[in-house]
Length: 135
Image (cartoon, rainbow, N blue to C red; front, side, top):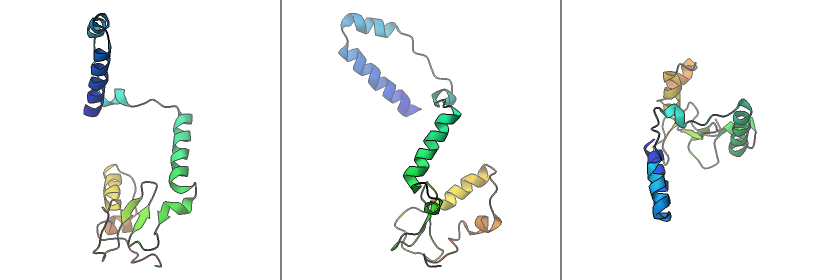
């Protein structure tokens, strides 16, 4: 929200400096509507628009192939999960070049009452149950 207000301020300042004195006075008389909630800032999209956007994201991140939702690239010591590319290292990995984000995702899902398999709840902070890509 703060970034949005800052952007609005910069745009307003740009308009004021680009306008003549008469235009500036007119702009200053326009009342500013204060946003009462974050809800007012969310775009309202139709079901069709949401479907199209989600399909574009899925295509962009996975080439629309479900097998690309789980990736363990050659030469990497971690598993990448989902369109968010959540990283999950095996238990004994010491060299963690990237932030491990999958356990936090599971924490978030649990907090929002999403059903999660027990084995995953148990393993999320221990490490991925597979030691390498071959396993």
